Image 1: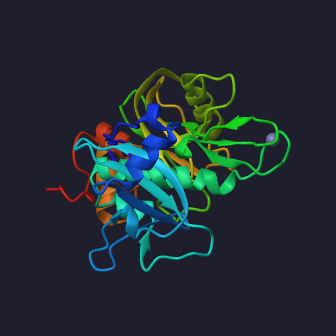
Image 2: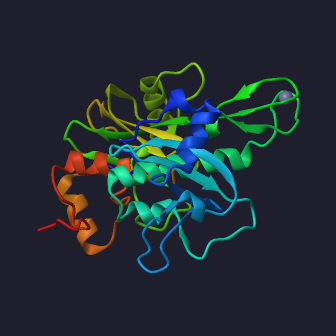
Amino acid sequence: MAFAGAAHHRAVESRRDEALLHRMWTHPETRTLVVAGGEVQVDPGTGAPLWCPTDQVPAGERYLLGVDPADCVRFAVHLPVGVEVERSKGLRELAATASATESGWLCHAVALAQWHATHGHCPRCGGPTEVSAAGAERRCPDDGSTHFPRVDPAVIVLVTDAADRALLGRQDEWPAGRFSTLAGFVEPGETAEQATQREVAEEAGILVDDVRLRATQPWPFPSSLMIAATAAAAGSPDPRPDGIELAEVRWFSREELAESLASGEVAVPGLISISRWLINGWFGGHLPDDPGWR
Ligand SMILES: [Zn+2]
């Protein structure tokens, strides 16, 4: 699954050791990914992410990502606003072709950079904060408070009815025919299971039971952790879209979904998303827009 295959050791114990960090940075085998404007620097020719030796990297904020399985240390360098690279790409585009391990690295670097870019001030005193712990935190020099990168848990659920049809919904701003599984953020004091039941009730007017958490996926747009669940509705209740988050909600049998995808009447999320992983898991094979179909 895209973004979910990070295999690096995050070297948490090294983040405060300045002498060690210096040795890591100056080691000839260390590699660095450059992040600029929320995108990753890529090779101008091949379009693949560029992992540069540290002496070839422009100046910017430096974040330690970790150590790869070959014992090579990897950093990200986040360029200041307005400094551009010759060619860069966003994570959605890169994830479509990168391995799950590679997209895990890219996700770590970009999600961290996006958080730093938007958390330059202390939520306590409003003063400017500075990078700390090799990029894993920000610290306020005025009041000494420490601030950690935010990760926002969201549930995403494939609901089935008594006939094993899948409930999919469409947001108003999406193109006609674009459907996905239902989703929403977990609120304070709420379990992922409770959030799942609440979201389905709010968005589709359906009560569900048997909520089971299946997998999770970092989703760096900008900082979600998607918690994929399945849940069951008793009988086959008529969905009632709330008209706010969802304009349309309907049940699909496997045959209906395959036919409407093949005809182009309906589209579902792309292969990098956990929503698609849930839909494929329910469908039990390749869908007509998969490369592996037939
Ligand atoms: Zn402060």
